[in-house]
Length: 352
Image (tube, rainbow, N blue to C red; front, side, top):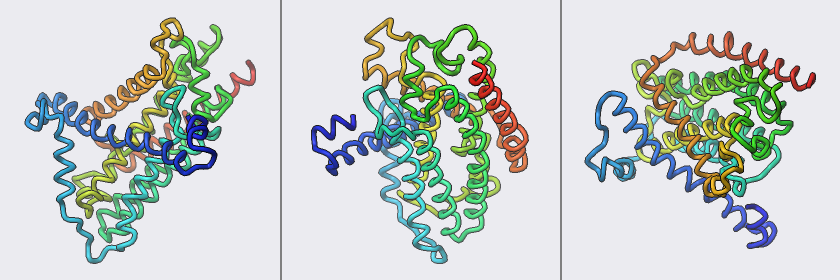
């Protein structure tokens, strides 16, 4: 994709970079609109309700109505707030979420920026979200906002450790940190996906329980990274009103939600790419039509949406953890398991 745009516009032309940046942004906004509607409907059916029904067919334009409402809201900045931090915080959070999409391979033909350090870039740039949340909490000059921000940053930084350990497990198996190369290595039938041990013979069955543990650890940490139930402690309504966005209104408030749903898809996309073949068809090359670029994007989207559905499902299934329980799960359970798992996979690769 990058080479095509360079041939079209010329080397180092600003239009090349704009053309590469716009599609992920459009997808991110469109997905957030759809995901808000999806969450409302999933939540409603979980509770034996109908959800939005009056705004369009089955309420499909409810999210659009919400945007119109938010655009009309007054943009209030508290008198005692740190004005610069308060204004910048939503945009810093949004940039951290948006930039992560640059290295996500949507198909064999499209990845925003095809760099060899893709996974490293995603891990590094997503840390901006923590900075934005802390800016929001401190800049609001509100004790509930500050408590929520501190909780969120402590949670995200802690759970990044088992996340990185799990990612290193796949990197050791694949021999690369290029996300596109990791997906390509899982080509063929679905049993070549890393959740089943990756490409190889019967000896890979040894990896099956290790990969299953890795995926479970990653999925649990992804819930914590995105502040989803049961790890939504930073936004615990019964304790902190609305956490770090208590003082926000209008479109600044909407930016936090956009960032949250963008993060949900980002972690789901990484899970699909690392463990479930990303844009690869489960049937390999046996049906050529299913491996066209359009179908590759469809497979990728389907896998990502499934993991997002499970995130929404868990919201209405599990109770919220306490802060001490959340840290116990991370430091006493997930990190030791992820570390032992990493050593076991490394030993397998060395002995193989």
